[in-house]
Length: 113
Image (cartoon, rainbow, N blue to C red):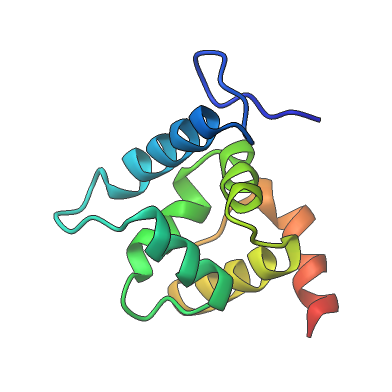
């Protein structure tokens, strides 16, 4: 199954990767003075470590569409179990949650422990 980013770009192509990153970062960085990069966001999610970027990582899980959350993860080599673990960390530390992601991510996080 292909995920369409926008303007006909498909995730997995070089242009699709760039389009997905741009959409994700535009959403995540919009309300804040300090911008997170795709590389740092990737590290925070892959390591489930949000201490330096809690609001940005929380925005990733709550403000970015689920389609783009999964697309960003796939493009950056983040497994669904790593994504789930990071989501649980964000939910626990910030209280922020996304019901649209809960049904798929929370069972994965529980089985990864």
